[in-house]
Image 1 (tube, helix red, strand yellow):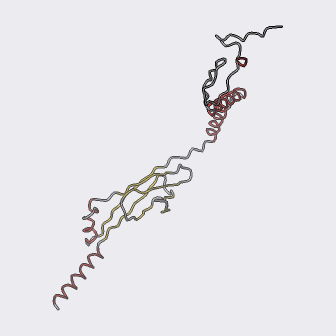
Image 2 (image 1 turned 90 degrees about the vertical axis):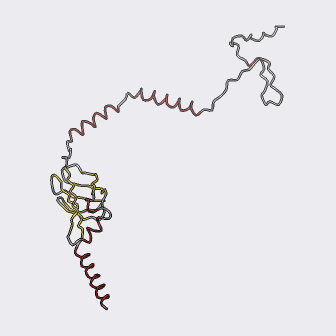
Length: 197
């Protein structure tokens, strides 16, 4: 009976120790200027300055929006303190003190560029650089169409024809009569004119 009491007291003491100690993990997010809407891993968490509790260390996606300023899209890293690594975290969890792991992230906003005159100047510059002489574009299009037609046409080998040549046996080629050859081919004598009666 005495052993059961000791065991029950030990269990009660261990439960008291486990309930007494804990680790609080928070990320404190600030910005210049303040009052920016903050999103961590695409979840709205509040306006700066704010604190967010977290469970896991690592890298988080962070977005901040503020009127009149460029939006900030980036990431923030939550690194574990030396006492919150594997093995040491078990002792930290059961210790009768409350421990806090705090990570601070600060972001600086850049004023938004809403200069409409600069935007119009860039648009005009692009417009003038895009304008080309109409005749020049027609010639370029015709040249491009010709090159495309040449590239898609099947290649043809030059055919050499000799006067009076007889195709090899089994060939589907037709013999070329001597009168069909042009007379301006070098080295080819024009056919003799028929004798007049």
